[in-house]
Image (cartoon, rainbow, N blue to C red; front, side, top):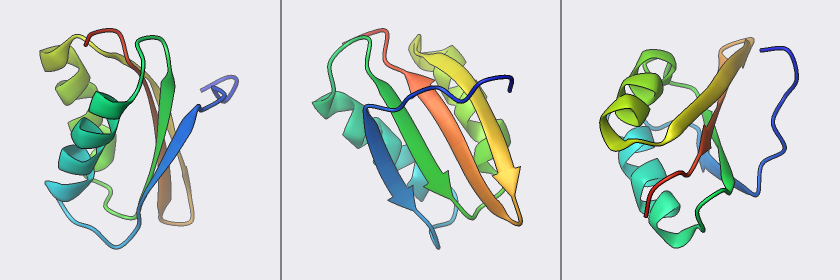
Length: 81
């Protein structure tokens, strides 16, 4: 990821395992406005594959991910209500 997106909302999913980070992100995105960016913080490496797949299914935009010492940040832009 070249430049980190500026998140409007950050969701802490540290310590949660699949499917909870995706489930919690889904719930949080329902509260957000179209065009806003959600940053999800996770320790489960499954989020790196799960979030792009979820975005493809739901019509939201996967903006990228980064990893630092077992901590993951993924970015999603809400495109649909």
